[in-house]
View 1 (tube, rainbow, N blue to C red):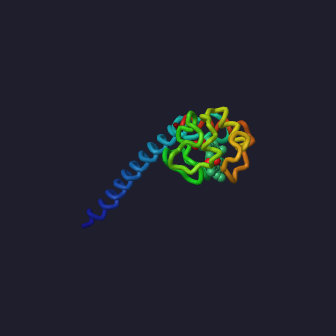
View 2 (view 1 turned 90 degrees about the horizontal axis):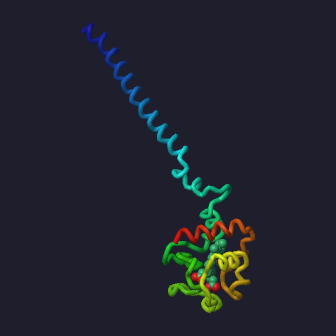
View 3 (view 1 turned 180 degrees about the vertical axis):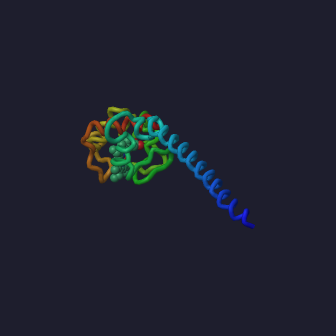
Length: 152
Ligand code: HEC
């Protein structure tokens, strides 16, 4: 009986030590995984853009995503912008374009998109992309167009 009392606390303390050790090993490996993620730029979504400030996707989200999705077939208030570079203006069969857009008669390229996003009425007078105030930052326009072109 006496012996039992002596042994138990000892046995307990070694098993707690063992548990602590296992926790420490787990913590160390979790930290090194984290360190790895932080030091490798490709693991971070924005770092791969390489530019300062907002990415093309963020600029698109800020200025266009209220009305447009890039995913094929996903029309909202505005038509989806899937493969918009190289697509004929006003040509989606399942979206109700203004007649101005339907009759625009050109194919979207980077230059047309740039001018349209800056001032829609200058490129397609009478279009119905409203309310939209235009995007005056040419840097943001460039980023958005690059984002649209690479997410085809
Ligand atoms: C307030 C909603 C709204 C916002 C914000 C908006 N659009 Fe639009 N967009 C529309 C609508 C509505 C149309 C259809 C216009 C028409 O039929 O005349 C359109 C049409 C377009 C078209 C022509 C598509 C085609 O199939 O010919 C392009 C390109 C376009 N938008 C790009 C953009 C981009 C890029 C942005 C962000 C910089 C943006 N839009 C922001 C509503 C919006």
